[in-house]
Image 1 (tube, helix red, strand yellow):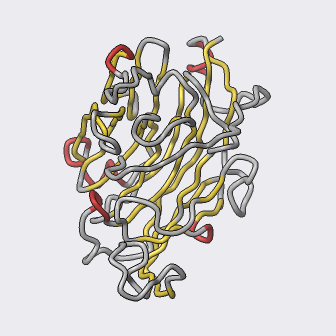
Image 2 (tube, helix red, strand yellow):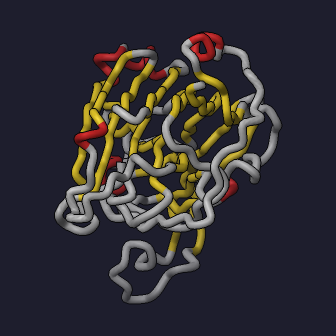
Image 3 (cartoon, helix red, strand yellow):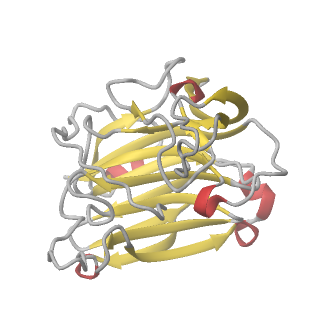
Length: 284
């Protein structure tokens, strides 16, 4: 989903433990030969579990309009809620005369949250599942995605399992190209209208990634959106490296506007990206 570079090298990462218990709704996956190795059901009200999630803070990427802060993410009623808000605050990074999008404005006009498992949990191959509900209001840009733990973007690899903006959901996989900080993408989009319009958007849906040694497949409600053979996913940066033969960590965020999100001029706030659960399985 990212259109400018993201330098992300989370050294000291940890692979997930294998003590997660079976949870309701995963019987079919277990019958397919998978075992649950990590999950967050968001059952405890309050802040996201700090043993599983870290927060991004500040203006981070893509010239997005929101400043990320931890206050906009919490668990309530068995859901993770990530809320985009319109609010006015002083920008602590403001520098008079700056041309940098992060520091040129004296005020913060929008806030949201972005959480990730970087440095805490990462996985190489498996079945990744998220049940969530996205708000499809104009200018919103929710996403569930992964980044490789080693290397700079995009040569560390990016997988957008769920991404929405400008009236469509997207499934994307990115590797490094011949130009630094420029990705080579494998992508497919599907319009909300084609999926069922506002009735579809008003409901929870299940997004899934099957990532094996041979391919990466991305789904929504068992509809395959994108399948790419691993042989097609080597970096094109001259290194010959493969960004999807290393562990990846997960991110959940709600961005506003920016390079892809579109205008939020007529959008009412607050808006929410709601997540029922996130689960990771590996094959026996």
